[in-house]
Length: 101
Image 1 (cartoon, one colour):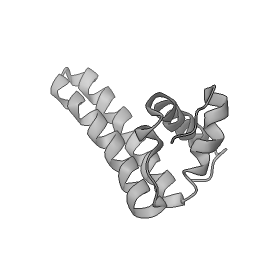
Image 2: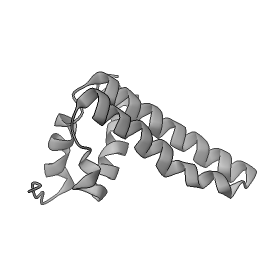
Image 3: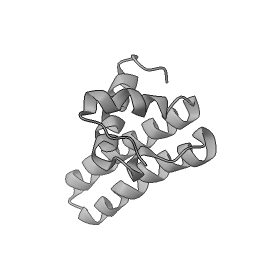
Image 4: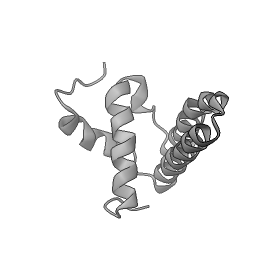
């Protein structure tokens, strides 16, 4: 049974614990960065068909990291909203150097 979390603040330490492998974190970072690039490109060119790539890129990179390097199940399966927010918080913290890239 998945753990219940009362808030994102309570969830985030668990989320970070699921991302201890550097390659997994790097894959998350690359996937998130590519998502931003595709999103900007889609809006800049009005090529809305590219938007279908966003979940493929984001989840694809993250899930490869979890299944092949971290060897755990992504938190998305049990906590989709908190996990989505956690991805972006971790991405921002990696950009600022608060989490090791």
